[in-house]
Length: 259
Image (cartoon, one colour):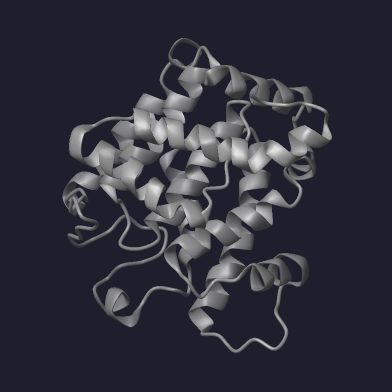
C-alpha cells in the first residue's frame, strides 16, 4: 500500500517545490477543489461553480444563495493565499498559524448567538461544546494545553519522528485526528483542521490531499475510530486513498501508474 504512496511522494518531490509560487504552480486547480470539497463537507450550499468564481474573480454573478456561504468561500480563498505565503516563508505549523488560518476561514461567519457568547474567529473556544456521535471536545480551559502539546509533538525532533514517508503520513493523520478530537474552536474546526493537516504535509515535502465530500461518511468513520479507540490506522489509510484520488490524473499525465 505504501509503495504507491512513496511513488506519489517521489513525484511530488521531483517538482522541486521551494517557494510559494512553486507550490501554487504545483497545486494548480487543486486549491479550488480543496476549498470546494472542504467547504461542502460542512455546508451543502457550497457549489464548485461559486467556489471557482470566487477564486478567479473575487466575486460571483447571479448569486442567490445566503451571504454566510459567500463569506465562507471568500474566506477559503484568503486562507489558501496565506497557506501559500506561509509555506514560502518557511513557517512552521504553530499555534499562532493555526489561529491565523482559523481567523481567515471564519471571519464574518460566526452566528449572532456565538458572538454574544464571546466567541471570536481566531480565538480558542470560551465555552464547552461537544460534537459528533462520540461527543468529543476538550473543555475550554484545557484547550490551550492540549493544543500546545499537540503542536509540540508534531514539531519535536522531526528528523527522528518523521524519518520516512510513512511516518510523515502517520503524523499528519495523528495531527488531524487529535485536532478534531480537541475541537479547539467554537466553529470551523473541520475546515481549519483539514487546512492545517495539508500545511503539515506540504511543509514536510508531501502532496496535499483533497478530502472529497462524497467520501465524508468514510472520513467521519475514520475520525471516529480515533475518538473511540485511539486507532490511527483507519484515518491514515483513508488519507492515503484521498491523496491517490487527488493526484491520480496528474500522475497518469506524467506517465506514472500507481498500482
